Structure formats: structure tokens, C-alpha cells
Image (cartoon, rainbow, N blue to C red):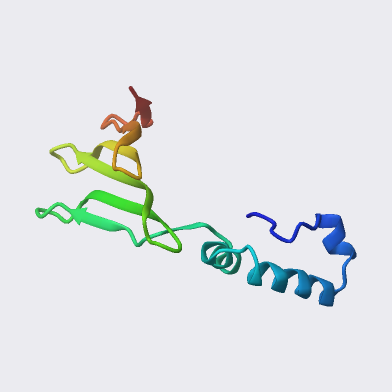
Length: 126
């Protein structure tokens, strides 16, 4: 998070409470934006929306989950993460796809995790 006071950490530590309050007030009344103040109070610049999940109708297994990361001020999408599950006919997990998307919805990275029916450990595949 940016430091708009112009004070170093050592200068802040050496200041008394009144001096820090004055520095903070000067910032709020001066160059801090709404986004800056929200980020200060929330201690983050972005926030994840509640996950959206889709389930398979037959047995209720999860098929897809999407988590959208949004700007705290505007709710504009910053990035998304989509997880897609595929299943063997027997109902066990086959492949899990982990997809990272940019703000425009373009895939930036895809990871595939293959599960096996024979007890072999899951592994990342190309």
C-alpha cells in the first residue's frame, strides 16, 4: 500500500500520535483518492466476489467454480479464476482444470491435474 505521508517508517515510529494523526489528515484532505482511502481501511486493493458454482444434475457433483477478483472501489473485474472438474463414468474425479483469466476474460494460464483410478497420485499434465 502506498505511503502518502512522505514519512519513512523510522520517522513514523519516532512521531507521537498527534503528529501521525496530522500527517494522516493532511493526506486525506490532500492527495489521497477515494480508492486510496478505501484500500487503507480495507487493507487491500482488490476483493474476491463470492464463488459461483455449477453442479452436474445427475449426482450433484461440482462441475465448475468461478471466482472473480474485483477492484474495491469500482467492482471492475481485475482477474478471474475458473476451476473445472471432469469425472470418470464411475464418478471419481478425472481432470481438474485451473484457469487464470485476465480482466478481459482471456486465459493467461491453464493448469491440468490428472487423477487416476489405480491409486496413482494425481499429477500436473501438459
